Length: 205
Image (cartoon, rainbow, N blue to C red):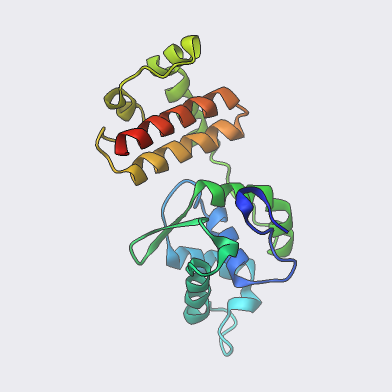
């Protein structure tokens, strides 16, 4: 069965792909880059019997975890397409579709993988992001006219990047704010952010 973004819903059977995605989400992978070793430890805490050494059930098996991550990132596997970002060999972060997938299926995932561990919603970070956007002159001008007239250099200051920052950096900053807007039920802010995304994409053309 498919879900938003054309991706499959979580499997009803335990599998390492779903487990690692959920583990990344529980340790803040929606908000920050997470070292793969931290992801492996989180996954081990969620499903120790599945990931432990045969002779040391108190320790995670690095090879099993690494193989699971490689399978998850396999471009030939459409089930997980676009849910994960990679920065070098050691750091991973959920994409906006990845966060949406985890949140949409959080009940099923937490039930399957130790529901006692609940991810933080990072309310303080969300509140800070909402304040910075809604108090900005750019948002005020857009709200009044429904036209995004603010130059890119001014928008860059709002999102802590440079006008000529890479498209990936812009998208990462915008995704963080989109998630905050969704969690706070601010469809207007999300629409504003998507206008900025289109403007940035046009600039990078």
